[in-house]
Length: 169
Image (cartoon, rainbow, N blue to C red; front, side):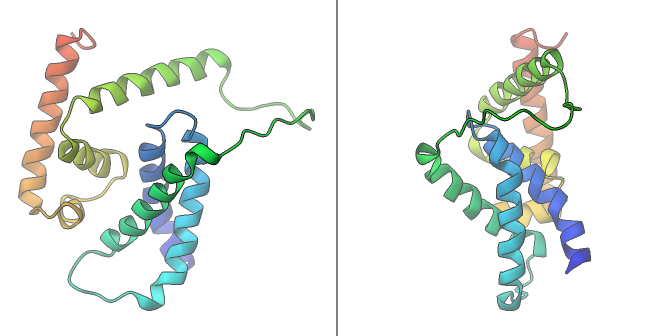
């Protein structure tokens, strides 16, 4: 189980960050949701049946449901402020670096929003979640070759939009 989680968790974290990062105020929940996915995966493994699809499709099915659950209850989440002082200095990025990351992430989201839903999902799975063409194809109902062609077209379309918006030379 430990080696399985070591293999699956990075993909799940990237997927959750990509999906929840698109929603304002929910990006910080992505690691928690990824943890919930891993826990749900461990409890679902005894019921897993190999039906010729990659195991990653099973994992991302669970992840998609957990992300959807989080998005559903997003309106009921309250922000809890604390008045306590941290015990050690913050080693994370400073305000300037954080601002640049937010701006770059927003630009990337805006570019992705220019794509049709299918191409957007495909790029998230291939580039951000790191799935293979075969794994992505099983999730999206496409052949591996069709995934590669669609990925090439999606990236070309992003490049055209970025050039038109003067984000790229």
